[in-house]
Length: 156
Image (cartoon, rainbow, N blue to C red; front, side):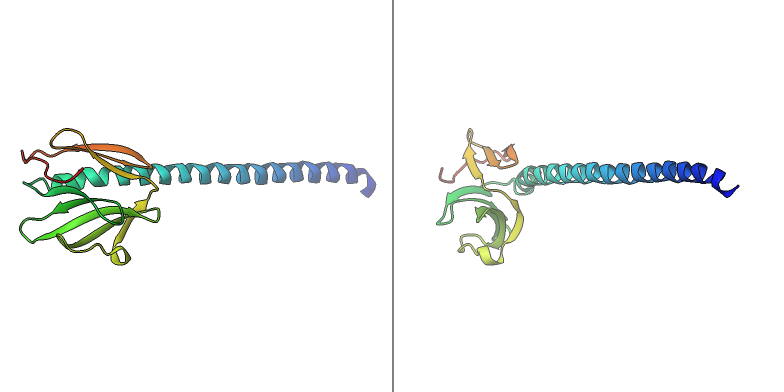
């Protein structure tokens, strides 16, 4: 009698093994898709962070002569000055990183102590009109216009 149930037991074990293999395959496949989705969202968030950073800085520093653009040994520097304190936030790119330096306006840049805003190989700023700036990074471009009515007085 025991031999009559052996094929049924083997068939049941085979079906259970098939379900287990299918479950493991779907779990691995789903985990891979989830990982890719999270990576895309993180890259999108980083792009939006880099681009919105400049708009926010420009709104905060929108006073007469507060935003200047100049060239340094490192490259282009976009400076957002605070006329009350005499300090400025200077933004520039070095070694594939976009850096933010907070120090007295006009003082030398200090990349070693600067905060990293994000990674980018491209950082180009151009003036488009008298009060409009276009900032380009790996993430794309953002345009901001100063509303204070002050003329742009930096060097191109």
